[in-house]
Image 1 (spheres, one colour):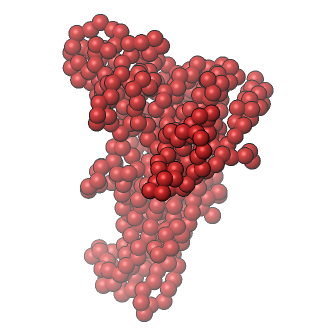
Image 2 (image 1 turned 90 degrees about the horizontal axis):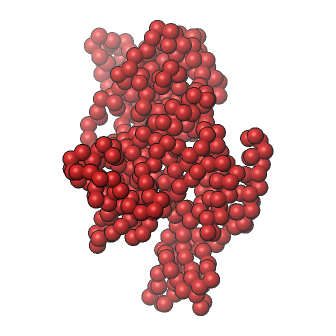
Image 3 (image 1 turned 135 degrees about the vertical axis):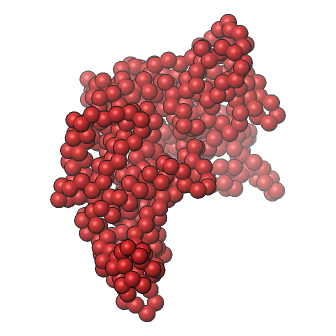
Length: 225
Length: 258
């Protein structure tokens, strides 16, 4: 078994010296830093994070997410992006020219979009937009879901992990910050990419994962072809 | 774990499942007749008279048995009473609501009950204390903890395992094991395109045209059948479903119910 990262429980004291605590850390009455979640400690150059093992996705402005249309109004869609709050998209925030009333011709119930969180109000209702580079309606392929806190691990440093999977399985992959992942390719390749992503999800708390994934994907590619 | 919430099946997933079926495989890589991983823990609730916890992929159910004394029905004075009840807890799936059971819940309970009743799994004649006045009443209560498709088969496996562990006891009376024999295994299939798929997942259940459940016992008799959804099945497809059920059912029985 590979070495694991430091695992902490809620309320456990974390030693912090000279680096700044960031997410998932709070200061208790005695002035010590404690973990907010059950998860792993992630140390960067100048910050420290506690990454929970499971949890919901909480929208932040600028996040790129994958969402599903669950309701259509006269001029806007209600989108499910796996968050506990309401998410809407207005017809003016799409690249299509349309008049209110016939917007379901462009985007129907049950269709997926790759969108950006444009604004977020104080009760965390968010407005999405698909009017930007790379944002679009997703067609074909397959959608899988992973817990949102595992997404950074699947992307890897500067996208290294996801590029590795793309390269070895010959698929197109779009990852939403909310834990939904769109994969396109031949049916076998989609299954192989899914298996690789599930493996990362299971082993996200271990170190040296990129090297092991390279080994795994090489072996997988040999067996597959 | 985030799920395809709110019960709306997306076009992308539909297209993906249909594409995979063209190469003879299913969305999760299974072959058409393959079941998901089954884990059964008998005697899961220690304080119950009989119980079982069944995990069928991500579908999870708990079955419990309660045996009480009571009056027999007037038309069967020399028999005990068997009732089956299924409860879909709201935490199991986004579209499940609290309140009295709906049609789907009742259908599952009835199909499970029919298999067990018609196979004469529980020997009701041995559950008589005083003919016409006092008999044992067997309650099978099944709670759905998590829903990922194919509740009928998960509930049947749970009910059977729980019945096998059940003990009849009351103050001042001898304890004895519930007389259980001749176990019916149900196999549920859905029709997508022209293929019958065993043990459907939520997505497959949502997009299927028709669903058929066949319960069979070890001697090869059909003990219960149920057709669901609006689509049609031809006679050949039903014959095919029966032979699949016999084959898959006997394999399941060997592995999990012995």
